[in-house]
Length: 76
Image 1 (cartoon, rainbow, N blue to C red):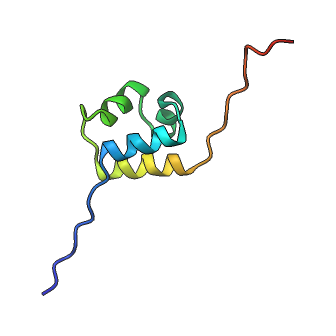
Image 2 (spheres, helix red, strand yellow):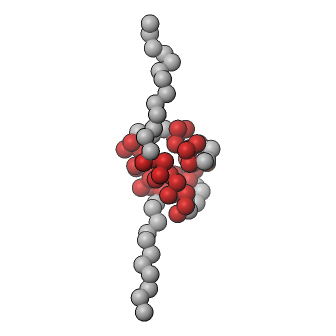
Image 3 (cartoon, rainbow, N blue to C red):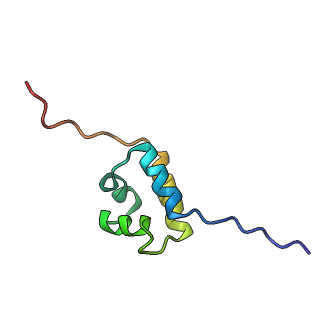
């Protein structure tokens, strides 16, 4: 009888590295994931648990293009 293979859960370290590669600020990613930025930061630092469902939400948010906020300190 074949046993189903378990797909290794994505780790917070891997997600944190991808967030850094894409240079996405936590405060922009958190609302797309449905978390407060402080909560998301705790998840990514390993202080809160990272469920497979949350990892999938983070990965999905990272795959969507981030809209940049207009600069507010532009000189005339």
